[in-house]
Length: 398
Image (cartoon, rainbow, N blue to C red):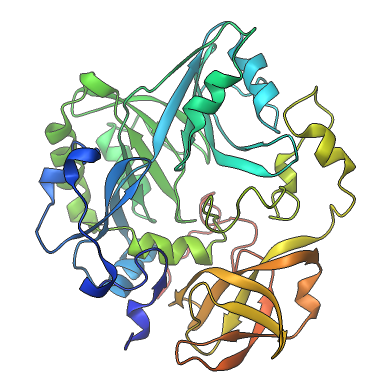
């Protein structure tokens, strides 16, 4: 690593041939949009058994600022799972720690599912498409199998709707989506709202959500009913004059870390319960029994956490240990990046046990293998109240 703008702590830590492996494309789903942007020089990853672009050869920091000032489009590997039937709401209340049956049609809700011991199994976003039809947009993981294993006694059907997702993120995304939908999307379409719309004379499902902590939208295809080339071309045609650019997920990764958005099985896993991961607000202990409820009720450190942020003047080594003293490791870094907005290097830190870690002075390993002092902070690193994605903070950064 030679330049801070190339620094991303993730599976593809640096975009170089030394960190890539050949993967047979026949084993995975490359998706309907792949051929519209593919170049041999692109770098791809595999997530939820789907290919997705990590790098399209763009300058990461330039794309980051385009995301913050205009808009960026991402072909993402998110995978909705459909749960429908007369018992869908009741069934999902049993599986997830948050009340799902109370959702309104046309709304989204972030929710997690836990194991019986309270450890986090999976996180994702629900949408209620119809009274008895839900989508759960999941990260990588065996959710469909898990749901089917617990559906006995419930009148529900669990399927893969084969939807593919495009994210349009950034302050210009609102104007882009308003034009794409011929003003059907307007100021009344708030954060976590969702619904059926038409783009290029075809039906799609759109939500005002994303993985960047910017104002943004996600466009879900409706499987065999979608002309993907027509949809893609229309987004480009409408978005380009407003500054829309296409990028791989490196700029998204940089922004999501700043925004405190967590990645399942990377930033947290089944060894952590929701309180330890800072996700206690997603647990409703007042609702009827759900998987993991007894363990979460018994947990007696609900006001303490294991997951925090680190700020440093030095680039921090991905997956390296964090120390209270030079011989006492107390955690490690599951994600790290350069923050162009803060002009600092930042990281997530998973401590080995829950505490109020913002009171402690810690050291982490830098890219040149030295121990450097870091500040422990609460997540997210800025915009604590999510005013940007909610559309309440509309200032364009210079």
